[in-house]
Each structure stands twice: as C-alpha cells, then as structure tokens.
Image 1: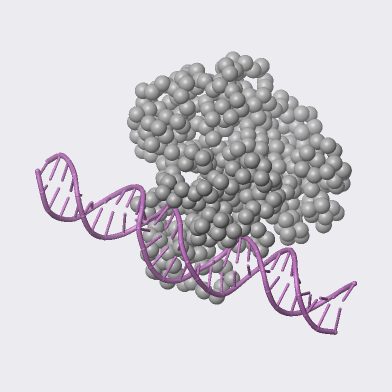
Image 2: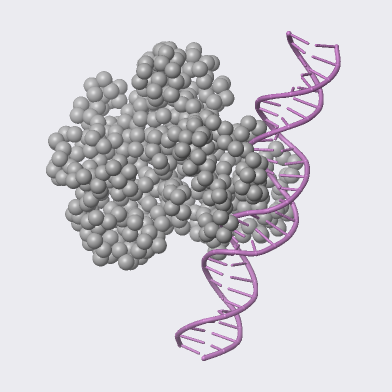
Length: 248
Length: 248
DNA sequence: CCGTAAAAGTGGTATAGACAACTTGACATC
DNA sequence: GATGTCAAGTTGTCTATACCACTTTTACGG
C-alpha cells in the first residue's frame, strides 16, 4: 500500500490513501478517522509520520482534530479548492471551455505608481496584457494585467490566446504563484466593458484587484478583473479565520 | 528567554520571540532567519521544536522556507491578518468606532432553504438579525444574518447594539468561528438599502454571501452583507493559493 | 442506583538521532 | 578561464520514545 522508495513522501501517500477512502464514501462527514497510533501501526510508520499525514488533511480542510477525542472528516467543501485558483482552471472545473481574446499585449516601463505596487524600481519592464476571458465562447470577464517581466523573461513574446498564464509561469519560467492579496469593489459598467461583456448600460460589475506573489513574496502580477455582477458571482472559497498568536 | 514551565508551548514562545525580532526591525523582509539547528542550539531545544516554531511563522505568512537555502522573512502584509476577521474588528483596525442599528431581531423556524444551508432539520430555531453597521456613525453596510441558535442558545435575547457577534459567540457560548465560505456579487442598490446607506438610486453595491463554520464544521451563521461598492472596497486579505495534493 | 475514581484512548508537545534532497561556495582540475 | 567535484550548510523526511492534557469509558465502592 505504501511505497517506501517512491519519490513522494510516505506521509503524502498516507494522506492520499485517506482522501481516497473519504471519496469512496468509506467515511462520511463527521465520521472519526483512524487515530494516529492506529495509522502508524497499520502503515508501519512512526506516529509522527502518521501525524504529518493528518496535518496534510487538516491544511486542506478535509479533516479536523479535537484533542482527547480524535480526528474527524470535515463537512464537504462547496468546491474542491480552498484557496484561489487560476481563471482557466476555474472555468474548466465548471465543465466549460476557457478561451481568451487578447486586447493589448505590449511591454511597458513601470510608472511610479506601478513600481510601488510591484515593489520594484520605476522603469522596470512590465508586460501589459488585457484580455476578454470567455467560457464556451461567452464573455465572462475583462482582465487588465501587468506582469513582472524580469521574473519571467520568456513570457515576453508568448501567445496568450489559449494558454493559462499560470500554466506558462509554471512550465516555462518555474515561477509558482502562491499568494494573492485581494480587494473587491462594485461599480457601474462603463460603455466599453458593457460592449465586451454583452451588458446593458447601468448594470453593476464586480471588480477584483489582485496582487499575486511568488513563493518568495515577489510580486509577479497585478491584475484587475471585471465580472458581470450578477451573471457570474465570484466564488472566494473556504477561508480559515486566523486568530492572533499573541492572544493564544 | 524560554519558560519551560509556562502553559504556552515552547515552540509558540520561540515563534513569538522571532516575531518580536522581526517587528523590532532586527530582520527586514528577505533577510534569512536563524536556521533550525541554530534555533535548537540557542534555545536548547530539539530541532523538531525549532522547526515547529518556524512552521508557525509560515502558517501566518511571516516567513517562507526554501529547501537547501534557509528560512526568510516574507514581505510585510498589507494587513495584520491573513484570513477574515469580524466586522467590528475590521472597523476598529481602521481606527474607527463600530456600532449597529438593529432592524430585525427575532427567532424564526428554519425553512427548507435555510435548513439546507445550515445542514440542519427544517424547523430548527434560528435567530434572524438584520443590522445596519456603522463606522463613526456613518453607515457602511447592511447585514442580513441568520444564526444557528441550538449552538448558542444564550444569544437568543442578547442585545447586539454595540457588541460584536463573534465576541459574544466566543465569550458567552464558547463557539469559535474558524472557516468561512464566501461568494460575492455586484448589483444595483434597492430603494430601501439606498436609504439606509445614504446612496443614490442606480449605484452599485457589493454583496457578500457568507457561510460561517465552527471548528467542527457546523454552520453557525449565514449572512449576506451589502456594502456601498465604491465607498468601501471589500478587503479579502492575503490568501494562499492551494495546489492539488495528487499532482504533487 | 449513583457517584467517583481509575483506566484507556485520543491528540499535543518534546527529545535525540539519522539520512535524503537541495543550494551554495570553495577548490581542484582541465 | 572554464568546468567539474566536493564539502558544508540548509530544509525535508523519518524512526523510536516519552510524557502531558483532555475526553470517554469502565469499574468499583458507597
């Protein structure tokens, strides 16, 4: 059941095994999962390794622990993901075909305002990338993106018609977006966007202002996404409410 | 420096010590923090304990790790918190005085639709609580909340004029909201809300649909919050982008 | 029958040690 | 000078063990 010479760590393998059990319906929500000691014995590993596996489940919101009682299956999430995922992935997850119409794709030098957001020197090369995003041919968002080119020079001349930006960053540039700072706003759609999104004047749009960080907390992308307010509610996902360390 | 007989675990004490160092400016962002072995030696603990301290920092987004290189200070966050916080806390954090006008406060029996959201039986007692939320006397949101009363029976007759709901849940009922599922929508303000929020007809509002979960993933609260779209942009905070376990 | 105490089982914290995977810099070699 | 190799230092994973804190169950005594 466990391959000790696999490249994937043992605790991940155990976590995956438990996830499979949950998905197969062996445990429903609220059910008690095997205790750490039991896992350790069953898979012939130390208790810490079993515990690490459980930690993985808890990070993903699949399970929760209670001291003295046990580890239990959490209620199923609304979506698979707990954080934020790429636009293309989100569309695909809904069973639709993502595509894009590129409006603007050009290199620009960072203005003072841009440089401040990216935390770089003014004049740094950025890629301006404005796109209409479509799902099964229907426009569902306009994205105004700026990308930190020095972190991914290969992206300068790529085509973004079909490709996911995140996938290109991962595969071509070994850049892994890991964090997002987000702020949301509602406003009335402007004439140009109304045309792009097939909306009537006077309707409301949802605007997400995002800063995307790499694992080293460099800003890789600044993007404003405009969604039709009611046609495409914006799903944030399940978020953990973090409480202060000091008060603990 | 470390109190071995304190009630707070050693690894938390070490984490707090490191946080203090960062706050005092001893390490600026990007700076390398002491290695796990160095921490272990300095505080006279095992390496695992030192590692647990670092894990605490990473969970909070204060630091990040790179295998083979070390542990480094993350860029400062926009806000203190990485998850979602209570409305009252958010207002206070901006240096304003939170208050409320209670529009409706009554017990209701869960309809089928409500029961489905709460994952309880229809007819379960709920507390309907509709409030205008104010900051320094200015209205900045309308909240339509439903609260799962069986989980917090003491809240039935409380006054919500000045008090934070989360604080009451914590202190009076030992209920700790830990997760939120959120969906956002933009729409045109209706006449009643325009009056409450001092808005003009035709302006856009931001609507947040939230499900709040306790640590055991029971639904404690379902709330729809209506914000003036542009006057009060909704800050989501820094979120970790979670990637699939299977693909690892 | 009831209440209390003990036992068993759970997760939480901690020690000591080991090897693997990865990064960097120094050094030797070509 | 360029290149490759090695060593040192880092985090990543894992074993084996121990005791603590908390919860539930069991057994005993009244």
